Length: 394
Image 1 (cartoon, one colour):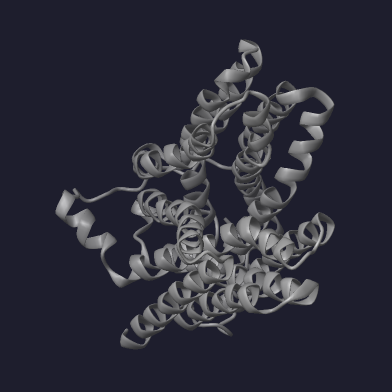
Image 2 (cartoon, rainbow, N blue to C red):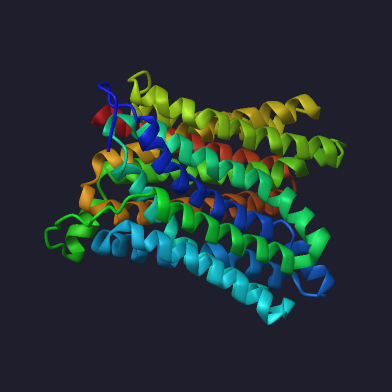
């Protein structure tokens, strides 16, 4: 691995990371390209809202259960085989749906895709750290997060285009081809990263390590940032519609949110690496900005208010996410990176599902969406205080 005298990744190192970034794009694009169209699918199949909820949840559910297991496997046998196996399994699950020719199997296919993503996602996260100098972790994870952000942004749009042109078969065929292409790219560009010697670890040792501040703080930051992103994408358009804004304006707000997060992440990571942002204050500030964005969605009227809320959420999530990942990499023994990244990714999935659930539950109980957004804003502010307080204690 090569780096400059200041610890920054060189062009050679960057070329090795690009297939890992592309793997992050695959899981984000795969999840959102299908999820965004499931409402129309269930309506066409005359399925219930419960069925829709299950179809939306199976991908994330598979990841929550399996990511720690595949992360530990990456530590045991090396992350590269787990990365490649996961990408090929994702392609196989997508292709199997096309070959089966049965639209009713979309839930089975999504579960298979989620299980495969649970393998290659933490493996890619661990390899980003292993292939990058420690002083370049923030920048590297910023790039990784930016590519995932592009996947989140393009997924609903391109997924809709592909389904319009050729139905679900074309979408799943595209996902299969994309996963195979990224796997081939990784074979050519990503070097083998051998497993490192590991001391024997008991369950108590694992619990003790995952309860330290070095793991809990960044995982809480990841959960909060992901919750804000999920709610921003899902509920800010509803808030805009409440104010009489059309789908063009609300869709533009979501695009601004995703694009802002994608643009901020590499810059935030670079600032962290250069010492301009400390980890604790950086994560806390990101959560506080996301909380302000949620409050803005609740109280600021009109298109201007919606765009302000979108920008604040985008900046907040873009600031907290790469710093949290870099902090995890810096405080984790290299031989346990896969296990740690897998466990931290569970926090992200919990935030992805829990944020919308929290907002929806509060909004239903209060009879107003603004109450739900304020509820999440309070929760994010509390997380920001907890992260900042833990940092000051350290």
